[in-house]
Image 1 (cartoon, rainbow, N blue to C red):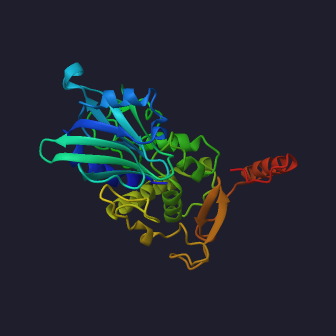
Image 2: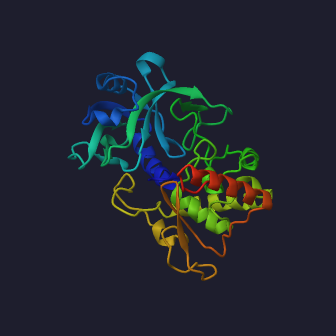
Length: 330
């Protein structure tokens, strides 16, 4: 699934082509891609046509285009076109007369005052992604809604999503405080988009390896110093991936021009089970975690539990086993 760097690369590619553009026509090819939109396809089209795109904005893995309706609200963005890429969604810039991409579900024809006629294709092979028109709400902290925005607004569908580590308004203090109150394994928290956004399985494994933390280390047992190291590792991993265009493992993960990212060549942990740790030479391992895998070095990233924590885990594991559930408890 695309993570923060992949989505930010898409946003950066879209921004100069869509900012200030007017939507001239909309063609919904697959109604399933409007599952997040509260109205019918005809209403989606009617509201979009004639709207002016103000910017391209991202928070976590969500993208949105704030819209102005000059005839109704003047130069004030009152709603946004929200795009969630899901597992295989793509936003692709094309010439206005270009044929559909193979999995195009929604096609927007736009006119930009400098670039002329362009098309934006929302392509999605697995149809897990979606587009929707949504109202803009004030942000809870009064800061801009996300990357690419100067307005303190966010779509209602995105309002529950926390800020990401690269957001200037991200609160490290709040992140550390909420970590200290949770006994769940640290990776589970990193994947919780209401606590910290934009991080998925790949970058969680990479940051935990960099910070020398086991994926199942209870968050409440991590010192403030080590939590600071983890946050620095998260930012470092995300910034490096962003510089390299994101992580690409197949043709679905591409930017607006169809080019793949290259960060997969720089991975230290993810997908390296059976290979030696780049830091200490120990054979890397992979363990099952939340219907996916966690990749780590058993020497550099040891699980460190206190006596009380070990006792709690033994009790919960035994209880789960008695109920017929042998899955690990984090």
